[in-house]
Image (cartoon, rainbow, N blue to C red; front, top):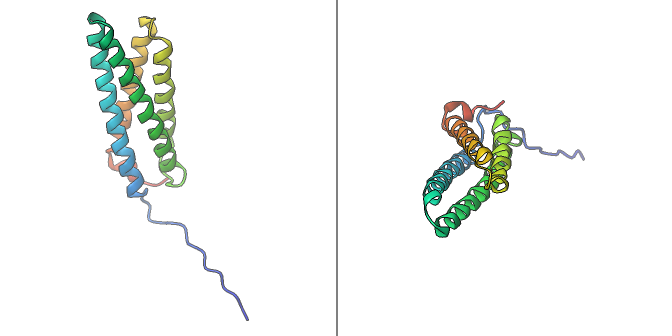
Length: 138
């Protein structure tokens, strides 16, 4: 008696999983929105009291939480999804630079440029995730 083993053939469609890519798109938009909120609260915190500073810190924590989810999804799009790898690296950079924001909050000479880097990275991620190129497998 001959035994046959059925194995699942690898996906050859040339497209990254639509669910993974859609999830990454949603998280990147959430990350951009949370960065905008944190930046607007930072501007208000400069002239206002302690309450606005606390709101800015809380918004920064939301940025970190969203960044963690973004790293996971970007890695899933890259490795099992066989998508581009640079968004995973950019997501890790967003997380690291975002955490550096907490360390440098007293030094505006470092805090403000870090914020600019965050906006540059999230802009690149927004453009890439919503482009048709994001769905192409590597």
